[in-house]
Structure formats: structure tokens, C-alpha cells
Amino acid sequence: AVSATSLRARPLEEKAAIVAAVREHVWPLLAGGHVRPIVDRELPMSDAPGAHRVVEESGHVGKVLLVTS
Image (tube, rainbow, N blue to C red):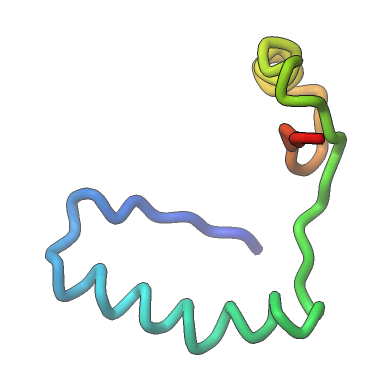
């Protein structure tokens, strides 16, 4: 299951605890390659409007990345 949260309205101490827990439990999984984001497509930075269209149409599965190169 995937869950999300907004930190904006939380007290500073709670935000700090969440960040510390992510550093301890999540970053090692990412660094070790055990968890990887799903990338739907990569578009050049010059096509930022096209990337917005893809996201607005909700036809993607995963991240839409803007790349520089």
C-alpha cells in the first residue's frame, strides 16, 4: 500500500521525527536498490509543457521526468 502525508500543518518536532525516520528506514532501501521509482517516460526540459499535459491527462504510470542533456 502507498500512503502520503502533508507535513505543512504538522508541528516542527513531528516534522523532524518524520524526516529522521525516512533517513533511517527509507533512504537505505533506495541506496541499496531495493526500492526504485517507476519511470513512465523522460522528456527534455524544453518540452515541460508536454510533460504537464501527460500528467494532467493521467495516462501515465509512474514518474514523468524532465531531463537536461
